[in-house]
Image 1 (cartoon, rainbow, N blue to C red):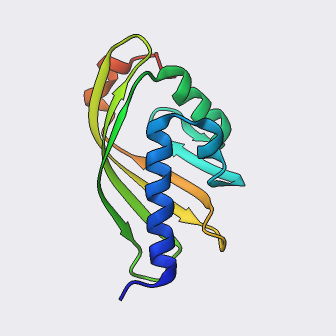
Image 2 (tube, rainbow, N blue to C red; image 1 turned 120 degrees about the vertical axis):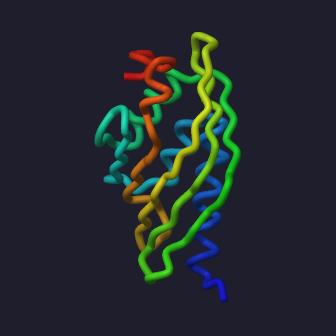
Length: 132
């Protein structure tokens, strides 16, 4: 049985992925709490606004293909989004990789912590310092 919080977390992750694909920094940041933190394998720990501004500044047309959204089975306010990211960069280069974003939510289902998990090794040659 799917709980209402499970459905809410699933919708939040889905909304996040769609908003990220559009590159709408303000709309993405509205999904996060004011003191939220993000961990990026490339950039380390950051607040949402500067993180997504960096992403937008480095990105061209990108496509996100959701694979799955999983909600914690332990009762934690946590969900993961598993997706393929066809990341287009401003200079016209592109890289495709699978990614898992781990989300922790506050009591209002706003994102308070996001940990991004992917193997950076295969994409470093394409991305280089275009994003750092």
